[in-house]
Image (cartoon, rainbow, N blue to C red; front, side, top):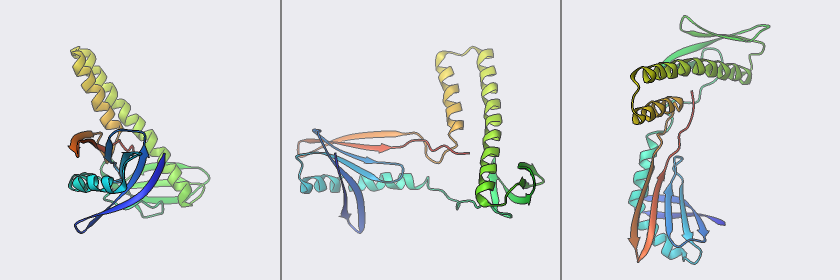
Length: 205
């Protein structure tokens, strides 16, 4: 399967896309969460015909890219040095780092008080990541237990059970992009064109 990097102009906008020539009968245009555009076309299609179909759907492509733009990170990457602010449950806490003979992270008086055997950012990042994971496990386990107790008491129908599981899955993916798949179809020049907006959860804490 051959991949070709291509670009088309739509008004004042240029749309970059990856073209895959495949054994298929229809043309597929997919917009992914990273705003990349992938076009899958039959092997016998001409580049001119492919570009014509893409241009006809250029407005749709721009709309999907705009949709994913709203989920871009709105805060810069955090640094793992003293004085830097980090988030926990929606609040900011600054780092206080002290070199010690042991590794420990404590949330106290509005600060992340960190004792570490090394003050290197890479080491502090590992300590913070481990701390976040432990806290997430405790926090999410409590939410799950509360939901499960409510489920057992009420003895809801099967559909309510699925709703509880869905809630838990939504919490587990503290995410900047929701899980959605939108598929549209249209006919151009008597050939089927399949359109997709693909999205997958991005996990984080």
